[in-house]
Structure formats: C-alpha cells, structure tokens
Length: 252
Image 1: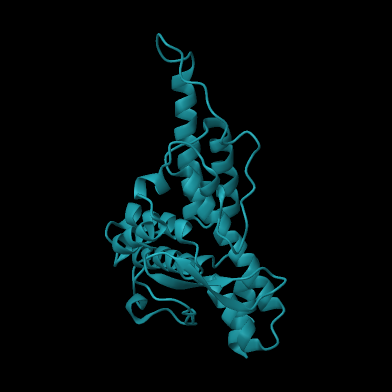
Image 2 (image 1 turned 30 degrees about the vertical axis):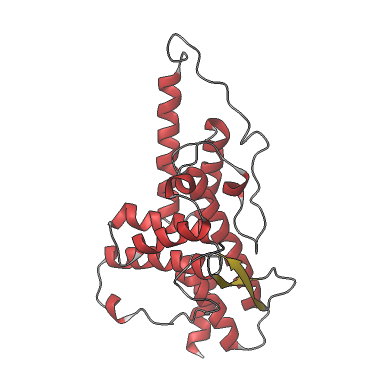
C-alpha cells in the first residue's frame, strides 16, 4: 500500500521562477505548499542571545529551508549538523527521522552510505545533479591480505585532517571552499563518514542561493527583492553582496 500522498513546494530553475506544487508519494507530517516569510529582524528568542544560541538557530533554519524546498536528503544532512553540534535542539531529531521515513531509507543509509551512490550525488530535482569527479563512486579494491597497505596510517591521518578542515570551512559559511575540500576527500578516499551528504547539502544551498539571488536582482519591486535576499540571509548571510543590498533596502 502506498503511503499518504503529500505535496512539497519546489523552486524551479531561473528560466521559470514561479512556484509549483509537486506531489510525492512520501509520508511526512509537515504539510505542503507553505512558503517561507523570513523576518527582517531576529526572532524574539534571539534578542540578547549568546553566539551559541544564534549559531544553533541559524543551523536549524538552514535545515528548515532545505526541507521546505523539497530537498529532503540535504535537510537530513543539515539537521544532523545541528544535532552534532548542539544535541537535541528543538525538534531536529524528530524532523530528521520523519524525513528519512519519507524517503523510505534508514538514517545510516543516508548519512554514511557504504560508498557514494547516484542518489547521494543528487541535490534535489529543482537543481539537478552535483558535479562529481569522474573517478568517484568507482569500485575500490579491497585491502591487501596480510596487513594494512604501506602508508595507510599516513593516508588516514590526511583524510581526518581534510574532513576536519572541510567542516571548519562549512561552519564558517565558507561553503564553496568546503565543497572543494569534501570533493578532494571523496575523490581520494571514495567515501568517508558523512562527507558525501555534507557536500551534497552545501551544493544544494549554493544553488538555492544563486536562484534566490537571481530572483532578487530581477525583482519588479523592492519588497520582492528584499524578500528573496532575506531568504538567502537565513542560511548564508555572507553570500555575494546581499548584506549591502539588504542594508540599502531596509533604509528605504
């Protein structure tokens, strides 16, 4: 028996920027077709909040943005980052599990697959596949019998360092640099912890930011432009020149 039929709102490519509702056969309790109205001011609970409060709220909102645009796998990655840094923040754990159920997969299959798959390389129907190095996803030879290969300890140390460096870039909103480091790691290692999902999540955020930025620049009114730039501000406040654009729009 098929699960309940639900709708998720997808953002179309720049050539057609209207919203449409696309029906998916997936179970999710979060409703459908809702549009985000980002507030120009921080929510009341963040007034006078600590840096940790702001970071946790920002990461949570990043996950919500991905979820609301129908990028369920990437939203799971974003909720996982919230949980990794801050424990059981709000309903992150429940939402992550519900999205995994909607995809019909276990969290382990999504977060740390045995090796990169075509699904892992996708960043959602509205944006198309991520660009993956040609060698990635190819079968790897098993370790030689009789012990670990020579130099394996040095290589593993390198993977650990690269993974940590990529996460530092990600948490500093240096998403494009983080994508490059995750790609280098995956190209060399084949798969490593949740690096494939983290990269897919950041690629989705980058493409979404580009879409919204194009909408803001082409907007027919200042209100529409501000709305699009504020949506980017929720998950990537340093993107391009949106800080300057929003400052000008909010002064008018």
